[in-house]
Length: 96
Image (tube, rainbow, N blue to C red; front, side, top):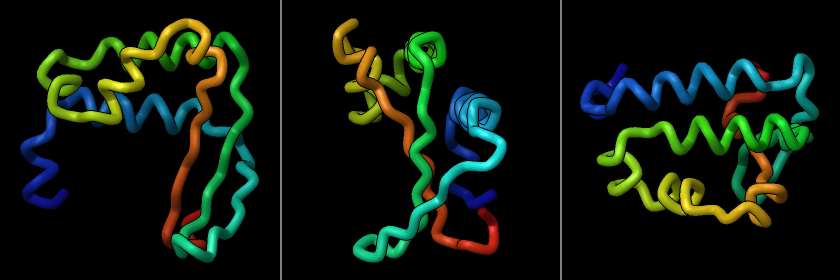
């Protein structure tokens, strides 16, 4: 763990574990040459989307306040929640 991560709230570690649990067994990784990364976009059910939003909203207020992307996700209205997508990134194709 790098020094910056030691400052992170434990909620981020919980989010990481949560996201790993909802990852499909065999994600469909695709190479994105412009960004030089591999990405996977799993199809979420409505139930998974709702659960993900609930989990994101469980973040400590300080984390929501200081992380624009998290704040935007937490503020989604119900219409936008139904369109929520998840994307995984990997810079190393040996780990996918």
